[in-house]
Length: 121
Length: 107
Image (cartoon, rainbow over all chains, first blue to last red; front, side, top):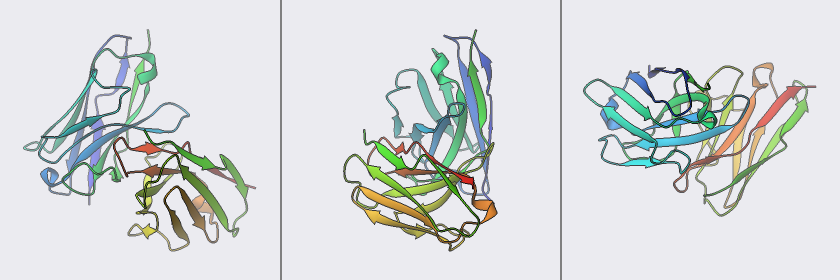
């Protein structure tokens, strides 16, 4: 069974940094692209960033480009999202999601349970 | 980026009703469209991909149709477990975008 477990969320001040992790199990991690998708409280879904199975290709939404960095450690079956210069509008539940193939494709299944990031002073 | 617009934003229905949700794309996305279901406090779950393909394990009362810019999700007979929020999402071109969601409520 595929399992994705996010961690690293919490309360951070505006301008601060945070690193999210997503531990994967139940599949050959390096064979699949992964993405981060976020959901602000009471709002809809917003794709944030994606990375290919090898880690060689990364994509970002314009709203986070230059501030967030996606990476992965295939030896540890773990996906990361390094976030800097955080803003109030980054407050959201952050989900990691498995893609359907090794290249970034944009079809997400399954998703982790999410980790809440709150940016506030 | 491609804008996705869902209607209605909220629907009120009874158990056993047939319900349809519409999703429109701001430009053609061929059939690169997915539908997700989300329950309160839970992660989204993939229901339909490639506009009309049912994800494994999803009940057959869910179906999808459409191509180009207009798509529909139909639930043939609404069940108590189906009261949730539904999102469409295009994966035709980076970056991937979602509709604003349709909340299915009990009438």
